[in-house]
Length: 476
Ligand code: GLC
Image (tube, rainbow, N blue to C red; front, side):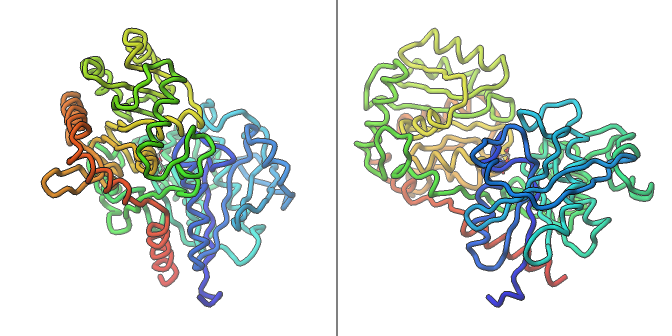
């Protein structure tokens, strides 16, 4: 590809592995830029806030790039722009201790103001980004939604793409935020206002040249009131510019053959997978039995992930000869009810109420089935990781779950998992019981596992779709 056709894309986001992670957004920002770069068609830089919680190992690699003055309403906030390079991608960090010198990324009373500042700082950082000029700003979720709006207004020479990873969080602020925090004329107010509030995600959807979300099904769903969280009318207006591109995962990172956390690395060997099962059973004080089917859930314990359904039927399912392992933290109500079940059925259930990457990898490797009955799921990465570790996903047919898990059909022998349509506890129970039946019938289990072994979710195809979108923008 001749270099003059190369485009320079700036990713703006609030989290990115390995620097800071609260959810799947960080995995995407931590892996998609490299995949895009490998295509040879795009150069990608990434800009992030510098949080206090960023590990020292990465912090010491930073070098000073520029001093910035960022207007926030009537104030000017000083900030430092640092940079570092990692696996061919250049990262920029906005260092401003008043806003980001805090341990975690979100959950503060002034989150709105913090990300208005960050979005505006992205604009001030643009002249200092090295290499060729930025052609496209690609921002992710509400925290960087205003970077899209500010670019459109202040730097109309740069095109914009906005990706919705989860429409439930929109960045709402009261009206006065517009006058207090943004230095824009009143003619811009309507582009930021939604339902009598300032709404960062609305501002992004309104101003972006292209809007994407993380699966084709979710792109359709958010145009409907049930999933659209109030933004569906606007998304319908912008339907021509809205597409869904499925996430990939870093298949080098999530590779059961090379995973240092596993008791026994494996590729497709069932015997080795069973060694992972028995070792974990021992660790969790469950009866050691390589043949008993192990069901697992690894998740934030929140409403979105469908734990109301599981809570309703798990005790009934535990009457079968099965084991269930849960890993995660979240809402008190869920933590309590799963802890209670583990206490009541110590030979069948373990509830590990924390988050640990090592435990997560071991559970993926040890389990036979992976439960994800989400109420909504923009893409979902855990079902993809589960497939990599040969744990068969059992999902509700929504968003990215619908696009990546094909229900097993015993007549045709097709499918790589199990699924159910309605948000209904007994549909989940029925599906789990059916999976158990398949587990015990070798002639059904074998083709299913073969399909799982063939499932591929690297970034390659999706990176090509993003490149197509960038190409379209370059000619408009
Ligand atoms: C959000 C969504 C999840 C998606 C992830 C990355 O966390 O809830 O479904 O996989 O973003 O796009």
